Image (cartoon, rainbow, N blue to C red; front, side, top):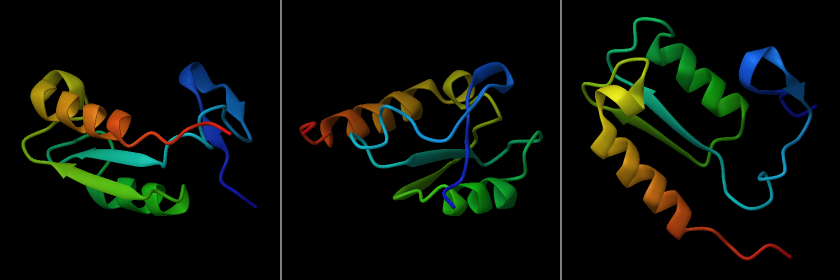
Length: 85
């Protein structure tokens, strides 16, 4: 059974509209004190992540603590989009 996708505010879904468009990507904050990086790696593997990136010096709020690295990785992901069939 595929892992359930956890959405914002505790909502759950069995699939997403983007799961056929972009491969799963996980950004892990090296200095995350909320969710240990090892646990995030496990969650990424369980979710079928095609790419997992440990962002050096990033906290749990990666886009706040390391905005340039976050933006770069999002742009890379966007550039890799494949056509929706």
